[in-house]
Image 1 (spheres, protein in one colour):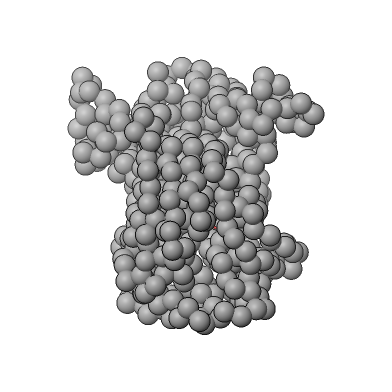
Image 2: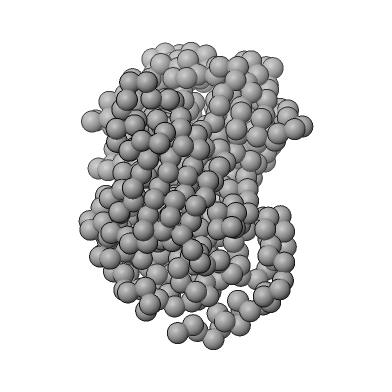
Amino acid sequence: MVDQASLRMVSIFPESAPFPDTMDTMSEFQNPWPAPLATRPLSATVTIPGSKSLSNRYLILAAMGRRPVTLVGLLRSRDTDLMMGALRSLGVEFQVDSDDETTVRVIPPASGRFTGDVDVYCGLAGTVMRFVPGLAMFADGPVRFDGDAQAYARPMKPVLDGLEQLGAHIEYHGEPGRLPFTLTPPVASDGMHAPAHTVSIDASGSSQFISGLLLIGARLPGGLELQHTGDHLPSLPHIRMTVADLQSAGVAVDVDEEHHRWRVHPGPVQLPDRVMVEPDLSNAAPFLGAALIAGGTVSVPYWPRETTQPGGLLPGILQAMGAEITWDGKPWSEATTGEDAPAAATLTVRGDGMIRGLGRFDMSAAGEIAPSIAALAALADAPTQLVGIAHLRGHETNRLAALVTEIRRIGAEAEELEDGIEIRPVPRERLHGAVMETYADHRMATFAAMIGLTVPDIAVVDVATTRKTIPDFVGLWSAMLD
Ligand SMILES: O=C(O)C1=C[C@@H](OP(=O)(O)O)[C@@H](O)[C@H](O)C1
Ligand SMILES: C=C(OP(=O)(O)O)C(=O)O
């Protein structure tokens, strides 16, 4: 049964109305977006824009160098615009290629020092709010940080405590440990001595607390010795990504993952003159998942053989849910291990509409793809418990609560666990249309679009929120279904 309220909302777009096919057009629509049904098996190739996590790390590392760096395939979306805006405030310049806005030359400040007495707007971007305060340590005056009202709920304290241990002064203007705040950097002479600064923080709430400190370690006079004190650490691939990116900028990092300890050696930070950004593999999840839901194939070109992105775990997860995966035209597991395997090739996911539940599944390494896996789990043949993701309560929204509410809204069963979510699917014919809330969370919007492939009359509130990390989600989704 479709509830009446959702029917009324969906019918706001009459059958003959032009379908809003770009995010620019979409953002003009205040009404929920009617998610398209997949009426036949898919056969699509989807080119996924650049990785948010890599783009924002490269922007930061380029800003810390002495020579300009050209980033190719940079993601251009709200989170990267916010990062570029933040860096611009700090004195970094950008030259955007007039033919291709994803090619951007980053010109660090000539003095090597950032501009102080400025404002930085973080929106809802974790990578901006947790990474840019570190750069403010090297500004010539205080830096004021603010963001969307919803960002005030996101945890910030461990990274700011870490910066205080390095000599910063933080003044909180709202709730202590949250945005908005002002960071006053230590005076230049402070800390101009070896040995390494030692910082201890509890990063069980977000790996970004660790990444935000590691990124600036080489610029500290004695380097940085960082210790995580909590008993678990989410999103380890993202921390490895930070380490790998630092290494590609010539920084020496010693890693002791067993004891959750990192040592960043002091020295120059300089990326190569030209850096290519991989596609965002986590953003590929809804598209690849669509092949399991609707049946048929979805291919994503330029899928890297090796990656630090947590989305690199997707082929294995989708395989466990019943997909057949090929890469470079060969079965996934053999193809990537072959000696002459290319650095990147097309990944294809084939499904037959049947999805296997995962049982108990630890998602702590890749929490950001949990909403996409949850959509598949809600349509699967058996229950799934996604665990190790308590920290998703501090993502764009409380994602555990949001997923439970939205899964129940369409008629399936779900409940919050202490560190995750349990999803108990029901036969697809018992699922029903609804207006799905998205809570300003891009991944709740793509979650709803996935459900809408097979459940009629799903409408998605504020689909434009996908612009956080995908410039034109509606356009890509519609093209996939054409
Ligand atoms: O460093 C990064 O780029 C990210 C780290 C992860 O954060 P958490 O560890 O808070 O989950 C991830 O979820 C987020 O989307 C991006
Ligand atoms: C958690 C996410 O984002 P952020 O970088 O804002 O933390 C995400 O993209 O899923």
